[in-house]
Length: 296
Image 1 (cartoon, helix red, strand yellow):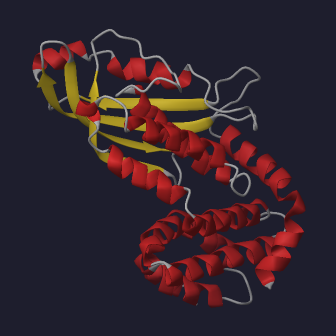
Image 2 (cartoon, rainbow, N blue to C red; image 1 turned 30 degrees about the horizontal axis):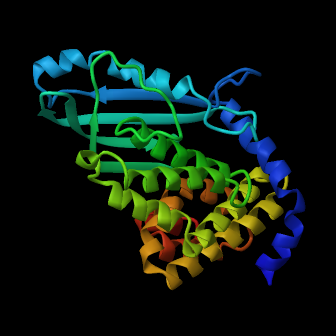
């Protein structure tokens, strides 16, 4: 009943969250009327490659950073730059008569609570080539990067409004489906990526995405209306508890979310007359149980 009433109260939820999250991102990255929609920082590690390949890929870091920052990824729903960190670890090199192929791992995040790590990546790249962003042509390099960029964008947009990230998750899904008909020698890992995006768009994950909507709406009011902030954030914690009971596969995902936001929750509830939420958090987020216990 509480959540139902909050949903009825959420008519202006998207408006206030857009203001709040836009200001939050502006605090980190300055936006302008013609700024790119992503602000990526890319790091590349080449230590495991032969020296000749390291020399060939000397400019790869800048090339990939330019690729992400130089293309348009969103539909201008929100005038804000999304921070993105991409780390690429080259692990192996496969020589052939017609191409240079590599094994690599990637770690991508929004510098907050969204992060993906992939150990099973393979791609071809010829030194000096400038990658081209295309949603219609599958490529072992750009399709891999695009897949995870769209995942991060989808997760970030879900913070602005319930299921606002769905169009970007659908773009990632399309890339994963294209991979079935792509270059067979680079198919490794795409089975798991396809499972990942299917899970992101599943009915089970809708509950988690809805929880994030409640949480960020509550955090918006943390300074000016703590009662309202606590109501929405407490509802989000209740939703996490329900999700963890129903689906054990989401337990780790929920605990990662709580771990990323446990300081915010402590600051919000530590002066509240009712401190029972800390007992609830001890059960849900045992990693920080000692910290929660201090406020009981």
